[in-house]
Length: 143
Image (tube, rainbow, N blue to C red; front, side, top):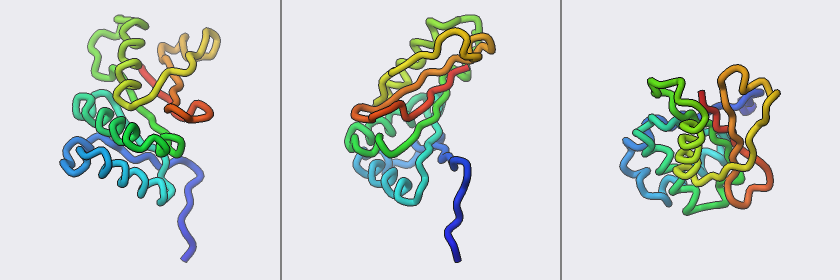
């Protein structure tokens, strides 16, 4: 039987990562991530509310322990999705994005400018990359 392929990314949700005690060891989680990558699964979904940030922190620790993994994966995460004050504005979001990137061992590499269609809709995007990655690899989307 031929292998199943997908034309769109299959995203692995990391919402309950913090509940698996064995994944609290960075090397064990890095092994698990590597096994998923070898299976062709390259996208990982996070949010700041998953484990109150613990899931992103654990994932970031695994990437710090094995930096070469970061070049092979994509992360989608959300920030401030449980914020009851949507009028808090860009300063709050910049802080949220910084915290997310810190937990995930990423760094901000660009910010879209006005006229990109995002500012007018109220959604702000930040592109992030991991150390050593040749080009932006992931999208951090905040609402």
